[in-house]
Each structure stands twice: as structure tokens, then as C-alpha cells.
Image 1 (cartoon, rainbow, N blue to C red):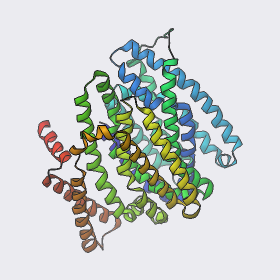
Image 2 (spheres, rainbow, N blue to C red; image 1 turned 90 degrees about the vertical axis):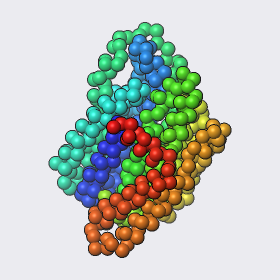
Image 3 (cartoon, helix red, strand yellow; image 1 turned 30 degrees about the horizontal axis):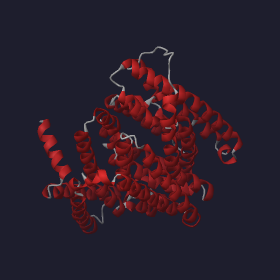
Image 4 (cartoon, helix red, strand yellow; image 1 turned 90 degrees about the horizontal axis):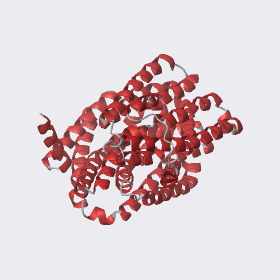
Amino acid sequence: MNFILTMSNFIFPLITFPYVSRVLLPIGTGKVAFATSIVSYFSMIGMLGIPTYGIRACAKVRDNRDELSKTVQEIMIINSIAMSISLLLYVLAIFLVPRMAEDKTLFVINIATLVFNLIGCEWLYKAMEQYTYITIRSIILKLVSLILMFLIVHQKSDYVIYGGITILAGVGSNLFNFINLRKYLNMTWFPNMNLRQHIKPIFSFFIMTIATTVYTNLDSVMLGFLKGDEAVGYYNAAVKIKTILVSLVTSMGAVLLPRLSFYIKEGREKEFKQLTIRSLQFVCFLSVPLWVFFTLYAKEGVYFLSGEAYAGSIVPMQIIMPTLFFIGISNLLGIQILVPMDREKDVLNSVLLGAVVNLMINIITIPSFGATGAALGTLIAELFVTIYQVYVLRNFLKEIVGQVKVQKNVLATIVASASSVVVTVFFTRTLSLFFTLVVSTSIFGIVYLTTSIALKEDFSMYLIHFVKNRR
């Protein structure tokens, strides 16, 4: 179900962004991307480290309705206090910061992002592994947003409307979460609440979130201040594609935190390791070919999704593509392995390292190279994060790394790349951009899967076995 949800996150931008990017042009999309990056910092303050901590805390008590209800209530009180402070600071910033005051309406609309994040309790539904519900309500909101996009956004000045629709698609479904809380919780007041037990771990995750948000959003913010909206627009087009692909690579890992936390609590070490191995195989199976394919076909991908006005996005996209592999690995090692082990301090250290590296590279490269420099900063930062996490988990990884044969993924990718390039060079010169992408994607995918099966690559064998057993 989470993979279906991820695919919807892939399809929605695939349909809307080519249209929106041509209507709003780099400046319009850049304004929305800049506002989204700014509000993400205030959302970070208001949510503290609750989105991750809440999953772990609720997963441990999910079989006891009273204990779960009490835990959720305690976390919500802390969340409400923090979000109230964040909302106050955000409103003050809209009126006091000149760069934000220029697009006051756009930033005012983004207040909804903060409110919906507070009431959504997404962490509870993930802890309960309610992925069918999460998927259905998310897809419905995306369909509504898709219709509104084509009905309302028609000219460059409609970037504010686009920003509002983006909010609806992203967090609008949180309203349904709030309404459905009574299905899983006892809606009574618990007088003997213990808020103190949550404070320390929440703030550990909060500091981790600060570092992560800094180096994932710092690029757009620095580009906006140093190079203007157009540079943000170029970079956003490259990041938009990368974000879609990362969501595919991390789709399996995203559902593991409650399950792995449960295994750790129950002492089921064998199951913990088996699930980790399968997840690492999944990351390598997807990230390596996606990295190479979208590096080779960056120009076609950018032109198809955004138009020729976004030629400045091609090189940044090529530079940023290796992060598919690094983020896939670090997401699994950090959030899905270290956090269930109660080793969030190691995750915090890794993202702090990434934030510092990203800031340093951005300061050096953005003034001279703009979006390309920002992409380089992100690439190097993600590399350092991954290296650090591999180092702290080196003893654990020694026991399982032999069962993750990434060399087979690399070999299958090389064969698929060569086949795809030969076909597109010699046989698709007269085809349109769309058909060139269709042909190259089809050839690449078929050859990659066929070669993986011929090599008996572990995850492809698992897929075949899974399909046979489902019949």
C-alpha cells in the first residue's frame, strides 16, 4: 500500500508539473518553492521531533488502547504548545521580513500547512500501520487537487493559487486524520499524564530534524536570497524529479520503523536482520538503475517535465542523481535501524555533519555556480551522512552486507544503459521527446529486469517467488 501511495506521489507531479512549469515559468515555481522552504522551518519548530518519535512511542503501546490514548494525548499537548509558538513567530516574520512581505498572500496561505501538520497525527496512523487508509485518503485529495490545478491555474499570476493547491495535496488529508482519531483512541482526559518522559527523546529527534531540514531546504533558501527566484526555479525542477525518485527508493523503508521497533521490543533479532537485508536489497535494486538512467536522460527528463525554459536544470539534476543511492541507504540505516535501536544520537550526529558540510559547500559554490553549486552541496552532504552511518553500524553491517550483492545491480544497469543508449541514438532520432523517453525507459527497464533475473539477483528472485505465491 505504501508503494501505491508512493506511485501516486510520483504520478501527481508527473501530470501537474509539466503544465504548471510552463504556465508559471521558473520565477513563478521559484516563488512557491521558496515559500515552501521557508514554511518548512516553522513546521520543523512546531512539530519538534514528534513525526519520528511519535511512531516509535505509539508502536510500542499500540496493543493497549488506554496506554496508546494516553501517550497520544501527552504528545499532542507538547505538539500544541510548540506549534502555537511557531505560528506566532511565522506571522511576525511575514510582516517583519521584507523578502516574505513581497509575497504576503502566498505566505499567509501557508499558515494552513502548520495547522494541518498539528492536527493530522500522521505518526499515530503510521505506528498503527494503517497504510490502506493513508493511501486511499491521500490519493483522493491528490485527485481533487489535480482537477483544481487544471481548472484554476492558467497564467503566471496564479502562482498563489498553485501554492494553495499544493498545500491541499500535501497536508489537506490531515483533516480526515483528526476526524478519525476516535476510531483508535479513547477520547477521554487522562489526569495523570507524564509529559516529562517524552521531552528528552522528542528534543533529540528535534535537533535531528533541525539538521536534516537545514541541509534539505537550505539550498532553496540560499538560492532565493543570493541568486533570486529564477535560480530557485531551476534548482526546484531538478529537485522535484529527484524527490519523486527518492520516494520510490525509500517506499519500503518508510513502513519499517513501527515494525522494526516492535521486533526490537520483542527481542526478535533474526526477523530484524532478515527485514533489514531485504530492505537493503530493495534500495540497491531501485536506486542504482534510477541514478544512472536519469543521469543519462537528464535533458529529456527536464524538457519533458518542465520545458526548454528550464535548460538550467539539466546539470544540477545530473549532479544530484547519486543522492538516490545515498539517501536510500542513509534512510534505512538511520531512521529504520538506528532509531528502533534507540540510537538516535548517532543519527543526529550524521545529519549535523551533513548540515555543516552542506552549508560550507553552499557558501563556496552558490554565489558562482547558482543551482549547480547547490546541487553539489547536497550531493557531498548526503555522501558524508551515509559514510558516517555506515561507520557507526559497521559491526552490525558486517553480519549482513555479504547478502546484499550490489555488484549484480551495477552490472545489470550497465547492460541496460548500453542497450538503451544504442537504441535511442540509432532508432529514435526522428521521434518526439515523449516517445524518446517512452522507448528509452521501456528498453532500459526490460533489459535491466531480464539481466537481473539472468544473474539471479536476490531481490528480483524474491519478487518472482512473491508473485508465484500470490497466485
